[in-house]
Amino acid sequence: MTDGNRRVVAGVDAHTDEHHAAVLDESGRLLGTAAFATTREGYEQLIAWVAGHGVIDRIGVESSGSFAAGLVRALQERAIVTVEVNQPHAHTRHRRGKSDPIDAELAARAVLSAVASAIPKYTAGIVEAIRQLGVTRASAVKARSAALNQLENLIMTAPDELRVELARRKTLPAKATLCRKLRPDLARLGEPAPRRPSLRCAASPGVSATSTSRSLSSSASSTASPASLPRARPACSASAPCTRANC
Image (cartoon, rainbow, N blue to C red; front, side, top):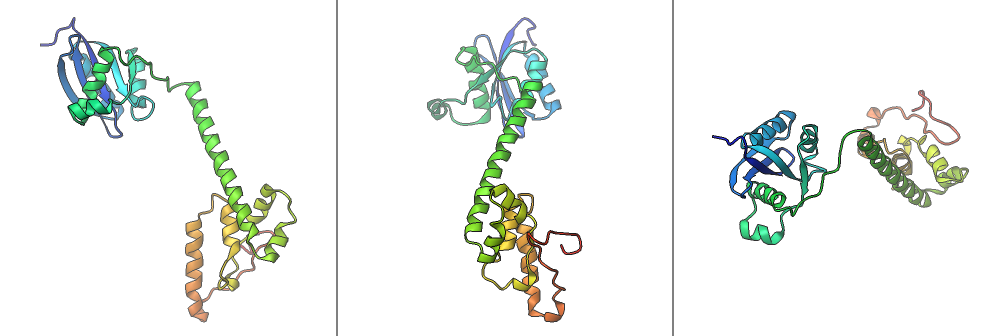
């Protein structure tokens, strides 16, 4: 029978699909271990299961900023004291072994002994929304810089006529605008280095290089049968922008 006055401490070993929890009493005695799904219902079941052993004092959680972010939010909504726990030391794992229930128990013992006392970051509200926007923007800026650097290297080795055509623009973003208008010339697929598709893919991150290469491969294979070769459409250039009729 559960003692309603007994205070308990829990530890959670977090994973992608399943959280393992362990409960200790104030004397450090292990009361039980269990696994719960990483869903809203699973969080409710985990909290109810821990509360079934006594009054919840604190809960220590591993990976509070990643795998256990949803669980931490559920605990904070109920004003349950949550503590961030680091992974067990390698020496401890060597002595006790490596398993999810053992890691959950070690997390609970770290909280009980006050070895772990850090409060997890609050991952809800306007602050978290701004942080996610900052991370997304930084990633987009990095990808844009990498694409422009790649485009510059491709232009260096492009055929003379294409380099002269692109030289009319002085900045890389302006050159990228011209490259986005380029289309493959089906009449020149036999050349060793078809530059137009490569330049277009580098200038347009949204254009899939895989789909472009597949379309070129299918066009190249059809050249074995002249009757089956589709009518070649005029290739676009900087002087002849793309229109629905020729692209």
